[in-house]
Length: 503
Image (cartoon, rainbow, N blue to C red; front, side, top):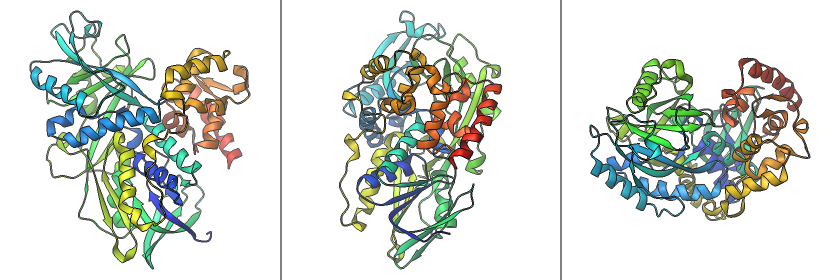
């Protein structure tokens, strides 16, 4: 066991909220340690619907402040990470059996104007018999609406926050759960243990932040030996991935019979991401899976609107996440607030900040407000800074990705267009760190299939805490969807040698 290390802030949880807080705090000049029991974003933060959005349906529950703040953050995040966040147009076919047209139109008007929209185009009416967006839909849907929101690579958003935090001086520990945290003389003594090596480390921190998501109560009671009047309600959300079954770049938002809305979005080029469900969940968050009933539910929602009928045989992959929503007492899981709540416990003069709830779109604001909660414990702390800062790879002129795409073409004329686009969308201006001095595909090392080359894998090990093949093929990227079983096995075998080299 190493000697105890003194730090200002210790953060438990390597999801979007924990990584965001670590980044914000490091940029304010604090010494920070972030620990995560698994891989970064292995839980909820890599299992979302991949959207930065205001939450159109939250208007129905009168969450006007939450929607407004999320819409404002949508613009902030577009500027911060234009390589992994970009605009989408959503087609909402109107079904007379569900919400009335006037209510949908009112909701979209509010959505356009609540958040001071600047970059994105506004809502427009569609004639689904005439407009091309209506081509894949059943003939009974004759009119609809089109509005804007944004796509995000959720797992990469987490990792980029962690990378930025580390480059500003934070220590990031993956696969290192906090096994104990106790108050001692007005500070926290936190012990972590690496689940791979067994190594234990001790830290003395002025403030402890519990950003463990679905495990927030477990950390609060079992690790920190504390309690709170606040609680989270676990709600399972599942998605399915199929081949893309319509032409064009637009997404669809459809209303199911139970009035839940389902997103049907282009995904990884030639695929579709369909979700999500909203089901109260009582089990261990680690054990969550998409069950057959949820698959059928999502397929039925699609088949209610589209001419091409999907079956279970069309499902390529499924994934589920447990959303740790602040328990506001609402019975309907869809009605439970997506807002967040802080609980600051200063017992014994050792502050503990617990975070309940939240959503990926508002992570930066949550982190900033979380720092406001604990700023008084750090007399020399610097002020807010993240609203106008870019994330790693996002520092392109005027946040203009199209202009950056042209630069990639000039810089790497030998690179196939699909690979240039892949690197640009994953790594932005840090593509150069992967490509290095290569002047041909051979310079990128072994090719494993799809767009996966050795150079990328080595970059992810060196700079982004990738410790297993799955860290690369499923969270840092989605190569798994495009590799054959043999290719995936070959990469996993090769990766074991890289892991040994890096150890």
